[in-house]
Amino acid sequence: MDKKVLIVEDEIFVALEIEQIVEDAGFGVGAIAADRAAALAAAQDCDIALVDLNLRDGPTGPQIGMELASQHSIRVIYVTANPAQIGEAAVAALGVITKPFRPQSITAALKLAAAEQPEILAAEIAGFTPFPPPGSWNGMESRG
Image 1 (tube, rainbow, N blue to C red):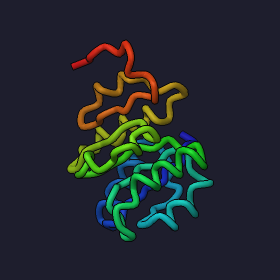
Image 2: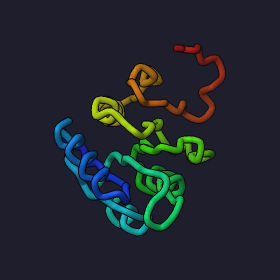
Image 3: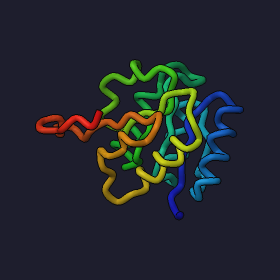
Image 4: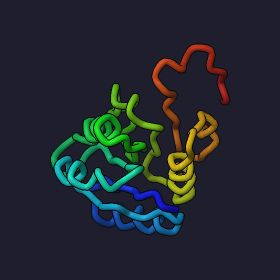
C-alpha cells in the first residue's frame, strides 16, 4: 500500500511494536513522534496517524489528533489506555483502540483508515471503538 502512517507514541518499545505491526500490514511508517512538535513536523508526509494521548509533553494527544485531521487531512486513530480522556477530540478521529491492543486490531483499523469511505461497520474490529462522523448519531442503529 502507498499509505504512510505517523506513529505518535512516547514509549519507545510500544512505538517499535506498533511500527512492526504497521509494516507487517503492508503500510509504510512515515515517522515516529514522541510529542506535539515532532508529530506536526512529520505530518505532511503521512496519511494515517496512530496517536497516544499522554506523550512526552503531557496529555497533548487529543489536540494533536485535532490538528492532524483539520490541518493535514490525516485520518486519526487514537491508541490509548485512557479513552475517556479523548473528549471532544473524538470528532477528529475514526475511533480508538484501547491498550493493551491486539496486533489484529491495529491492522484492521489501518485498513479501515486506508479505505476510500470508512464505514461504521468498524465496530466489528475487536478492540476498536469507532467514532461516528459529526451529526451522524441521528437514526443510527445499534450494532451491539
